[in-house]
Length: 105
Image (cartoon, rainbow, N blue to C red):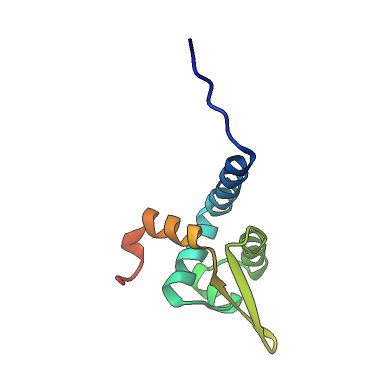
């Protein structure tokens, strides 16, 4: 007789939430943005643009995806928005995937 594994609704929602984080991070530019934000403690689009050598519009699209996924937040100061990583699961994933790219803690 085979046993059937069933998931509770709560377990399913948790897995879906974790999958969304992984999907959002599953692009080299977004992974780089999150890594850089962790390394610097936060920065604005202009600084990211000079670091990544990508158009501002491209970076903004990626920031939008990360923000929609709840991985980053932007804090406005006048006309400047400084982005930082706020999701602990994303931090754990990035540090686990590329520890050699982050400063020692």
